[in-house]
Length: 60
Image (cartoon, rainbow, N blue to C red; front, side, top):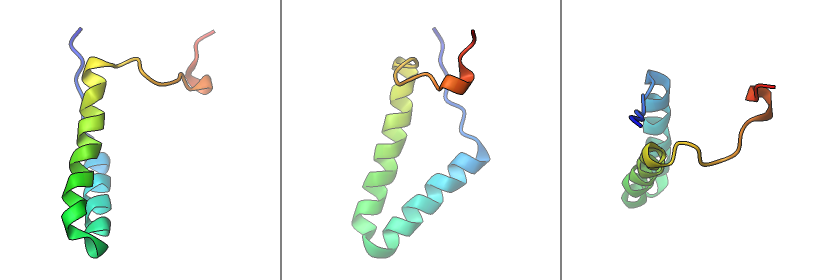
């Protein structure tokens, strides 16, 4: 199964803004948190079905 993560421009900008916000108070921690978020997202490549199914998206 070839799973691919596609980063939208909005997602990329949101992550940048999160890291910049954290860096205002804790610059040393900001990069670590940004990388942790990316690592969690990339985890989905190997585990695409983890998590719950959103009820509104269930096909009946």
